[in-house]
Length: 298
Image (cartoon, rainbow, N blue to C red):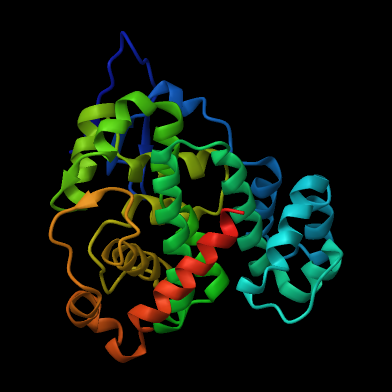
């Protein structure tokens, strides 16, 4: 039987839609302000859409990004940051696209778009962004454990909590108490969101990326990133789930949790089936995340 999360008709008339792979799996009333939320950036949307089309070449990608000179300049700025490890300075976008390739440019485009989307962010928005950015860096660092391309893991992890950011932008007053409370586990957070706004950030994110015509795999990642890691998950979903757990354990949380395990305990228990010896050390991950966060906030 489908689950219906009904909104308040007098305050917030909203369409009832199906989300998830099974049309009967989730029947959800999406809050109306979320429905009216604009996409993160038109150029980033086009870049993500192009990445799903194997026939699109790098010149087309460069032409799309050059449609917004300020956006292109931001991508070049990040591309030339020593924290991203590129060996030579790139002065032209087309050179950067040729050298870095589709996946890395896509990752940089989403990073720039997300930073711009947040604007002059409130402390709560910055808290959520910090978690998303940390997850992205960690996903890139652990991608070899799951045999996933690092840039692909980075982009998916950066987007995994877009629903939470969307709820904050559209329902800040209602969501703020959820983000300032303390919880036992993510399931308790999702329940608190449903009580506050009738939808949780996983469902909200899945709906947003479908509405914005992002690659379809992002919807499942948004919706299921707090589920337990399962053997039938895609490698990319497993990577994002693991990165989210690690980010929380290392203190890069979007909300406060009680009694989180230490990093070594998490790797030895929850993540052990993925190859315990392949994970970076806690110190290596903290160094990578902290350094990249500095670059993102410039």
